[in-house]
Image (cartoon, rainbow, N blue to C red; front, side):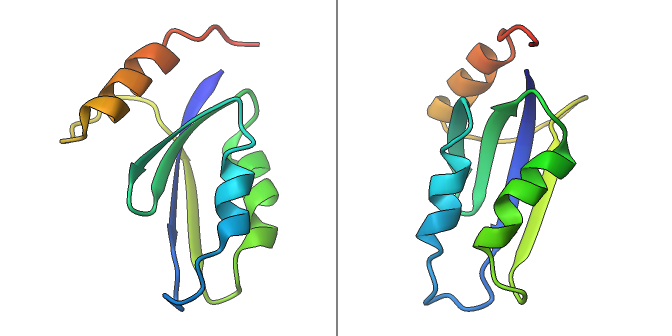
Length: 93
């Protein structure tokens, strides 16, 4: 499986979109990294994730799905670091 980064932005901060969060949590492995960013493991591609999540956001919201590959630098909490280490060892389907 591959790791993807999901980022979103609510244009209406009072609309919490719990259904989007529930849809993200349907993936086999996930980690809530930052306020509006998640890592997920998925055997498909970014388009399939986007198509799965798009019905759960409003037209004026923003959604970005990106395959998490290559060289990255960041300052994350230990939970996210551990999740990335463990998820990178999941074998592809």
